[in-house]
Image (tube, rainbow, N blue to C red; front, side):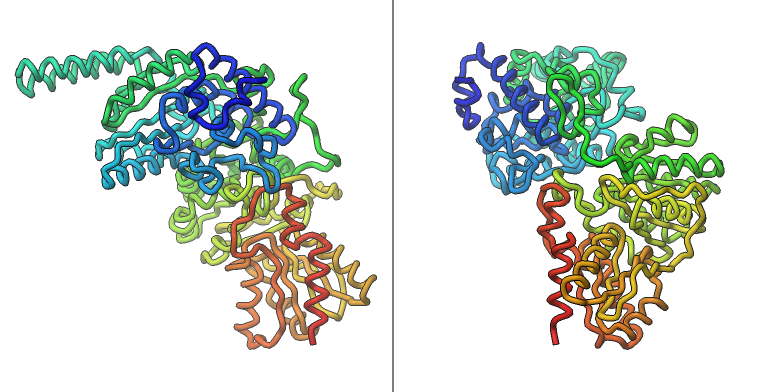
Length: 625
C-alpha cells in the first residue's frame, strides 16, 4: 500500500516517521502529474511546493491554524493531504473538486482564491479577528513571488506590519510567475544570502541589550548597523521596513530545514516573512525545463510531456488577436501593447519579439496597467491592453477614472469573455458587458468569429476614445481571414437571416448557435426567425432593432454574460425609451449565480446556451399566446 493511501487528514501526516516524508512527497508528485495529464491544470506551481505543503501540515494544525494560499495555483498537494485524495482525480471537472481553494469544499480551505495578491490582506483580517476573539491560532499566508508584483500584496504587508499581528507570510520564490517576472522587485529578490542567523542574532542581541539597560539610543544604533549590513546582501531589509521579521532564503525542497524553521517560527508572535526558494515543476523534467508551458497546461503525455491538442485546426481567438495586432502595428507606429504578466496567455508573445520597444509587461498589476495605458494614450500613442475579462475587473475604477472620464483612446482586448472551462467561477468572464456598458465614452464590441475580430480590433484602434473588444477562450470557426482590414461602421449590426416569426438578437459567441437554432426551429416547427449579429453592445444599432421590434413582434436576446446589466438589458432599455415596452422580450444569458467549473460545451448546455437549449427556450417563448 502506498503511504499516501493512509493519509486522510493532516493528523495522519503527523503520525508518520520523518523517514517516510520523502516518499510522501514523491507520491504526491506522482498523483498530481497523473491527474493533470488527464484533466489539465496548474501543474508546475503545485509541484514546486510539495515539500513546503508537507511541512506546513506537519507543523501547524489546520483547520484551527489558517493556511491561506495566494491565487491557489500551488494548492494541489494541500487538497490531497486534507481529505480529498480519493476525489482528486475529479480535479477541475464538472461536479469535481475545484482547481483552487474553496471554503465550501473543505474547512482546510481557509479562504477562497483564484486571483492574485489577496492572501496577505485576508490573513491580516484573520489575525485581527483572532485577536478580538482572544484565540491563539496561527495564521499563515503562502504567496508566490509572481503575486508580489501586485501592489495589493504591499498594501496588506504595510497594514499587517503596522498592526504588529502574529502573522506568518511565506514567500514562495520560484523566480517566475506565469511568465518571467518583471520589475525591480524580482531583481531585488534575487539578492539571496542566508539571513536566518541574522534574525536570531538580532533577537538575542535586542534581549541582551535590554537586560543590560543600555538605553534606547544604543539599541537604535545597533538596529541600524544590523540593517545596513544585511541590506547589502539580502532582500530582508525591504520586508523589515514593512514591520516584518525576515528569515531566509531557505531551500524549499529541504524538508528537515523547512520543518525546523516552521517549528521555530511558531514561537514568535509578531509578523514574520519566510523567504523560501523552490523550483517550479520540481520532480517532472518537462515542467522543470518549460515551467511557463506547464504553469497552466492542458492534457499531456506523461512520458514525453507533449501537450495533447484538441480536435480541429482553427486558430484560437487569442492567436488571431496577436497576429492581427502585429499586422496593424507594422502600419501604425503609435500602436503599443500591454499585458499584466501574461504575454503568452493573451497572445502578445509574438508582438513582444517583433516590437520589443513597444511592448510593456506590467506584472500582475492590472490597475497600474490601465493607468499606464492612459498615460501612453494621453501622449499620442494607441495602447492596446490585452487582459482576461475576469482580471480587468480588478482595474474597474481606473477604466472609469483614467480612461473613460478623459475619453482617451485606449483599446481593451478582453480575452476569455464568457465561460472559460475548468478554471471555474474565479475565471469565467461573466460580467464585462455589465461593468463596461454603462461607462460614458466606451465603445463595446463582440465578434461572431475570428475574421470579425480582426475588423473589430481595427475599428477600436481607429476610434478616438475608449473601446473594448471581447472574445472567448478557444478556437475560432476556421472561417477565411480577410487580408485587407478596415473599420466597421460603428453601431451597425448585421442581419444574417430573414424571418417573420420573431427575431434573435445574438452577440458574439451566440451568433452561430442562434443561426443553428433558427434553422432547427424552421425545419421542425415551421418557425421562420430573423437572426441579427448585433456586433455592438454600445452603441446599439437602434434603427435596425427598433424596426425589427415593430415588425416582428417578439425579440430574443442571446449573450454570454450576466443578464443583469448586459446586452439584453440594453435592448430592454432601448425599447422602453421608445415606448415599445409591450414588445415581448426573452433574454438568454447567465443567471444570477456563479457558474461552476466544467468544459465549455458542458456549461453552455447547462445554461441553455447551446443549439438545443436555445431552440427549446425560443420554441416555448414563441408558442405562448
